[in-house]
Length: 124
Image 1 (cartoon, rainbow, N blue to C red):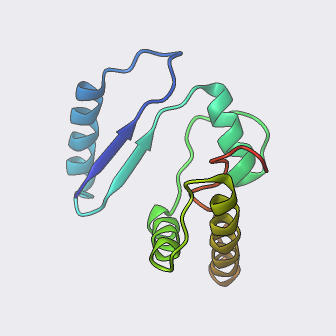
Image 2 (cartoon, rainbow, N blue to C red):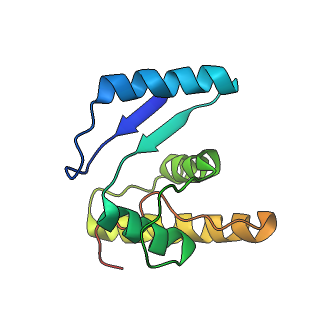
Image 3 (cartoon, helix red, strand yellow):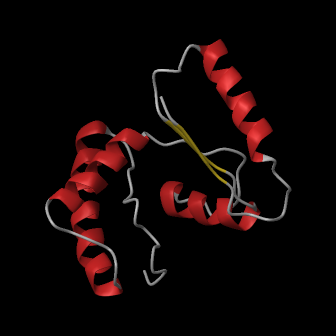
């Protein structure tokens, strides 16, 4: 399955090809090649922002993990229903729908899911 690697931070140099190779080796060792994996490398400020948004903890941490398939499915279904996030106004509508769906899913599953588009326009 796929491995998506994003490195928006510049604080620590990251060589993507060696990292990708090592992660693929880890997936093989752990026997989890049948799953998609997204890896996002951020600096402490970015990690603190994510930790605050998704766990309510206002400090950086070393690793965050998410049941991405549920969040991705909700995001994709909103798009299929005609929602977009090209402008701030469109984003607000889609964000509210995504948030509503994920809050109900969180209530039913005991998780704390947040929309993929959270913070896209940084106005919340």
